[in-house]
Amino acid sequence: MCCKLNAASQGLIFLDTICNHYEPLTDGKENEYDTKSGYCATHWPGYITVDLENVYEVKQISFQLWDFEDPRNVYWNKSACTNQLYVYRLLCSVDRYNWQVVYDTTGSLNKYRKGWQSFLFRENCQVRYIRVHAIHNLRNSGFHIVRLHAFQEMVPEFMKGDIQICDAAFEWEQGDAYPLANQLLDLSGRIQNIMPRNGISSELKDKYLQLIDYLFEKSKELEAVNGKIDELRKLISEPVSGRLKKDFRKNARDGIIGVVLTVISFIIWLIIIIVE
Image (tube, rainbow, N blue to C red; front, side, top):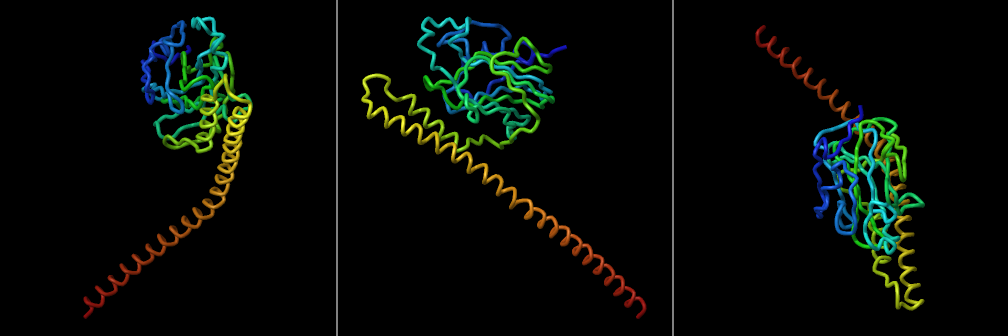
């Protein structure tokens, strides 16, 4: 039988978010929402973290971003929100320190998303904390999740929207690391967000766009450099680690030999005293 890990059954606890619009997110109901209520929110860049209170074998995670096309979105002027699109990362953890990076939209050509985001795990994933890393919203400084569900079995009802099949070979992060490449990406998004839409000269608009493109390209270059650094770190760390292990074993062996020789010398000394 499917176990739906939400507030109706487990009472999820929310961490890291400064907004308190979270009641409808996990109550199991298909609630209406608008720009004032019916969602959980934080300001980007930031985190929305859910605590399941116990470690579970999770097979599926589905959450819904604020969506201007959703029939349950009752905002009166939805047509003005077509640019309310989000960039995010999804992470999971059992201890809130070591994080599995389940999915990162910044590495996709279609990095801006809305509506349902569904993640299906080929193998059960050990999860207590579910974190949505809010990276960017094209329209404003908010990041809005309408509802979030975790399942111990796959549930076709919630296999909708952007569906990702997730393997067990996740990237790992420790602590609350926020890569510099993503910070540059955030900055380019913020500049795009504050850029005047009307009454701006074409020359000034071009300067805005050039700066946005420059920061975006530099973020990608830095991301590539970080990848090379990881490769170099691995090349360096493996032989160094091997040498340290070898030295440790040698020192330990030498230490044991030294203790044995000391004991033998002590026994010989006692024998000499007794004989004399």
